[in-house]
Image (cartoon, rainbow, N blue to C red; front, side, top):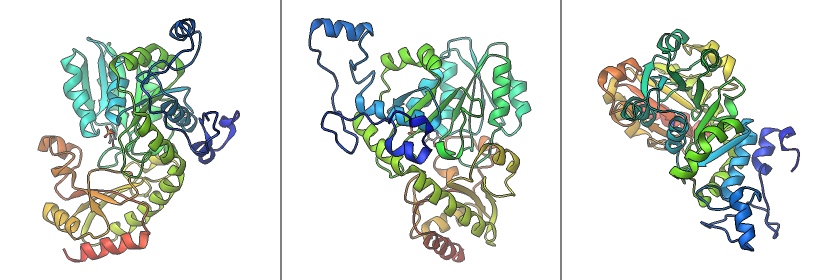
Length: 394
Ligand SMILES: *Cc1c(COP(=O)(O)O)cnc(C)c1O
């Protein structure tokens, strides 16, 4: 596989980055080893000097983890990557490795709960200022810029209400002041949105979600240019140790092989369910990036190549209707995870976003009747029937 870059994504996700041992195994090998042995003292010296490119210690790099990083780079069009133990390890490393006391971060306020805690609570503890803005309007990012602004951070579509941020627009603002744009691309998946092509400098994933896609393990990855990784993340990653386990890297490699099949099916089913729910009398509102009535349908069309595997919707009957519907579902399971083969539903106001103030939840449109549905790979007719039955009982 010398010409991986010319192959299409679905092919790269099966073959890309593979590094076979002398046994010629078909499937990627799992190298469950902490360290590596050297043939001689001179060989060890050369390895540590960087004259010999082999492995030194699995906190720095490991052959299985390396295959996962290379396959992700091919998918994303990135020069380099570091795989991490979880999505939060990826995002906190991507932010902390490049920031120091006195710097300022501008972030869209609609963020995954733990990302919001890092930006709003953790960074200020280290003397890093942060501003949270309504990311739906580019003017808010611009108005928040200070002389010490170093990083812009956003996710799009957002959790849980699937708001969309104009990635190319924020890139332009960042480039004007020499700042770095970090995008959390979990909700879009690497297939439906390409932040690096839109100009973003760094992309992060929780591989726990669609990349594993089968509810098995945690993982994450940070992707960027070789220059950015060398200058910012390389030493931070080696010495703070957020490394991904080789076993989990192997699980994620297997997940990548089927990612296009799953995401295509999930997105098609999500579109079908979004239309069904939008027409249902118990539903007040559906937010789905693939529908023409999405509040930022024009931005979706510009930067995404498909809808989403998630649907957010609001029930007219508020919290009691949301709870009753969730309890009545038989196929769709109640869980805060997403991107799984199994369809999962959650009530953000009482689970993933319960730690926000009511005011912050109102700002984000997370009312008591809002639920977030992550669509799985089941037969879509069974999912439609499940919702039909659960909603008819309201
Ligand atoms: C799940 C998630 C994370 C965190 O990932 P973990 O693997 O759970 O640490 C970050 N951002 C978004 C958008 C997520 O959905």
